[in-house]
Image 1 (cartoon, rainbow, N blue to C red):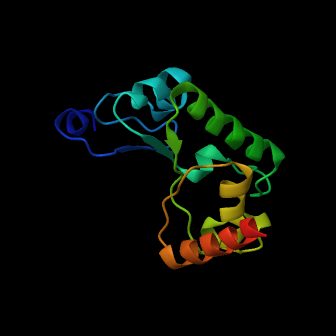
Image 2 (cartoon, rainbow, N blue to C red; image 1 turned 135 degrees about the vertical axis):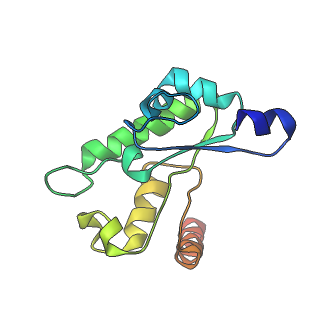
Length: 146
C-alpha cells in the first residue's frame, strides 16, 4: 500500500489480519499495527484501517457472546484511531450467516450492524451482503429522521 500511495491519489484502506498473524512484507505481527504507533504509521499512507470485526469487538471466549467488555474494547479502539490520526475504522466482514454472528445477536445480522454503527461508532464496513447493509442503512436513516 505504501508503494501505491506514493504513485497515486487513491484512498487506501489498510486491512489488518489476526493479531498474531505475521505480515508477509514486514515480518511483524499485525498486533503491532493495532497500537497508537502502528496506527500513526498507517495514517501516513491510508485513510482508513480495517481490522477483523472480532478483533475490534472480541467475543467472550466462554459464551460466544459479545459482552460489555468487548463493546468497550471496540469503542476504545475506534477512539484511539480517531484521536491518533483522524483515520476511519471499517471492520471486515459483516455477514448474514448464523455461524459468523455472535450468539446474543439472535441470529439477526441487523443486531451486529447496530452494535458496530450505533454503539461502537465505526465509520464504514465491509460486507458480503450488500442488500442487507443497504436495507439496514435505510432503516437507520429513517430512525434518525424522527
